[in-house]
Amino acid sequence: MSNAIQNRYEFVYLFDVENGNPNGDPDAGNMPRIDPETNHGLVTDVCLKRKVRNYVDIVKKNEPPFEIHVREDAFLSEHHKRAHLAISDESITINIPKDLIEEFKYFEGYPSGISFSEHEEGARLVLKLANLEEAKKEADRVKVKKTKKDQDNIKKLSPAAKACLLELFIDSFEKKAAQWMCKNFFDIRTFGAVMSTGDEKCGQIRGPVQLNFAKSVDPIFPLDISLSRTAAVKVTAPDDKGLGARKSIVPYGLYRVEGYISAHLAEKTGFSDEDLEFLWEALINMFDHDRSAARGKMTARKLIVFKHANKLGNAPAHKLFDLVRVSKKNDGPPRAYSDYEVFVDMDNVPNQVKLQEKL
Image (tube, rainbow, N blue to C red; front, side, top):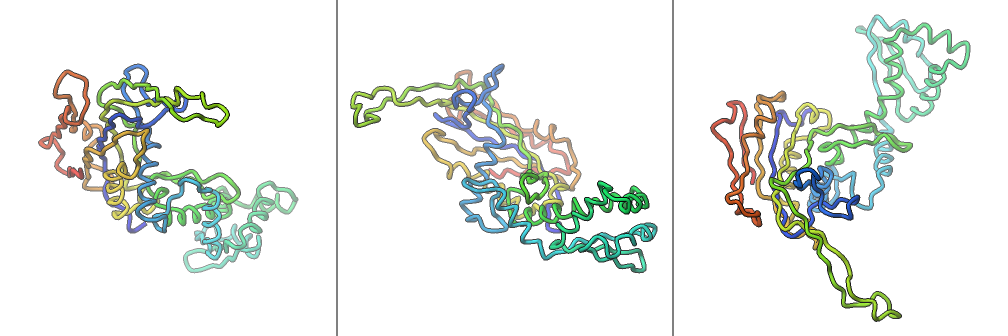
């Protein structure tokens, strides 16, 4: 898409938690996620993407082109139905080269819903999407070779013609629906989505923005705290008091996550410069709109962006990440962001890479 970003990016994002649980593990009683071998804390990419989605939902009020596909209380299949309905008046066009015209004259008037016309450079097949279901049934008859007529005609098609046939009937409609979804949903054109389930399929989209798991700079030691209750659960059991619940917290942890943005994948989804700036805004502000007693105090601390001079990039991602180093100032257990020092090696940034500190 023409408005897509034209540069490759990588970024380093630092955030911390104080007396809270940044990402509970449901398989461990909702304790904070940790690497069991090193005790470093973990926060999944899915958790961080959820917070980005929630921020976009709040600011843009779930209106296109900033709708959120994966949102609370939403039914994904309903979005797919909207896509299919929206493109029902459109057509799929496939240009046929001259050397395949004779083979594709077979489709002149068959199956229904297809128009075939020749021109100077070859021929053109046009399928109205409103007639897609009927045309698909005819295509399926050709594929499974149910009748003698089908068997005779399918033998006349070269591998190239068969591939063109399959693209026309199977792939193209989902591609059109996927394009509509990318155009209207921010999280799809940013993170991608699997939309190949249900009756109204929209294919699979690989998003240009990808995140690693966040990992704490130092090992964390979660605390499991007992909470007492003064109110009884039932009127008939006034003595049913005592321990009410438990809360798992990290006293303090500074987490680092690294991300990637592909200009080539952005072309396919339409991820634009406007989307990119809004992504930075979401990463900087999302914790301020995601408060809960369980999560404690979570704060975005640093957002360091590496912008390459072109789509392919000018340096390996891992070498750029190595330019950002975080270290403790003293030997005691860290309990605040001020216990750390963040060093950015500006002198070794490659010439064609621009470093930007967004936060």
